[in-house]
Image 1 (cartoon, rainbow, N blue to C red):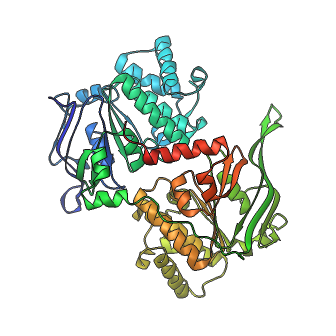
Image 2: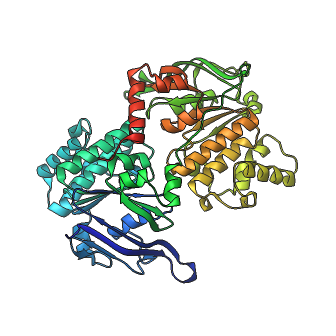
Image 3: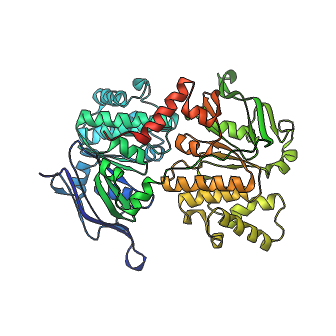
Length: 537
């Protein structure tokens, strides 16, 4: 039997000579029509480089293949001429990239971008192309498809942008669809919708699916076969059930055991309330007209009450747009709000920015994207030490460096790295730097905004363990914002479920996870934990 895709002894090297880095080292696998094969591994394992090699999309000549073969329908793709590659790319083999916002052209409408694929490979233009684009957008479940053709990517949500990418990839009904982390950083309900959509479309078109992911729950749900990659090698491969039930390689065993474990820390019975809010509202005005006037409001946070005690973690969960991040920003007075906010019994709403500054050292925030929130022009030492300078803490420069080194060591980083820059660190290490920046000021309350989203499962587990350890050591209170309910379950003592700016449900996390009361919470739980336990197919 001839396989649709045959990858044999594939090597990929970046650079040449002494500076050469081997990214893929002798990878081999087969893919057949209608089959789903998952490439699994942590960041840097070579998954995406392998996938990009199939379509010959690596930056040549910097990246090259010292050895190996990629046969698609008995045609060699390694070193193939541009004419052959153009006939394959986007037509017979299509790819859904990891981040749709950076993959879609921000200046072109979605209708034009999907239509371009049809024009290049099918010569389809005008009304025929428009009808096909509307059909494709309807196929991937984009609402009001005919009215969305002129929309630009930034006008769509993350899940909608991912649907547009899938529609573009499916435009010519490819034989193989390569999906590179297609659900990273999407809400659990949107994740479930996208995965169900991919499965339905795969059955409809009979295409093969090469799925690249670090989420083992997705592999269980989607794939029949799996290749586990580490350091550019496939260390284990076989049927999903066999690999998950009886992993043989230590790395596979470690990956399967890496999901966040353990129980949340419980505050003591007499723990003081650190942060409280009553009837908190953040409304953004909607203005229309030649002379803009307010015609309504977007109620991002709409009348919320809760409290966080010393040593306690309150988890805030909900889909994108539910108001989670806005709530965190409002509590720290980083966005305008109405209602009562008190820190250690002192009202924050009445304080001027100057009066608020001394309290800022006790209220810190760790942002969602560590790469975006760390200045690329400052060294790690400068980033972590900036707060010390602002608040006049730490003594002399030498004493501050010592304090920075101690804090870096406390979050599991080498203290000698403080003169390096953010781009020299992995995603998990950058998140540790963000935590160190908050921790160095010895705060009492930290808002953690999606601190583990888009991190590998093993790194997620490390960050969760670190946060629990730091909480016990320093009696920290956390407001933990996340859409990953598995991580929340391992960290949060109390839970707040938000939708459209309102609290749908709140109370002890254990009770809500075991007996959710609202239909919305039950839907969130079902979407999150189905991925964790669902079998393949």
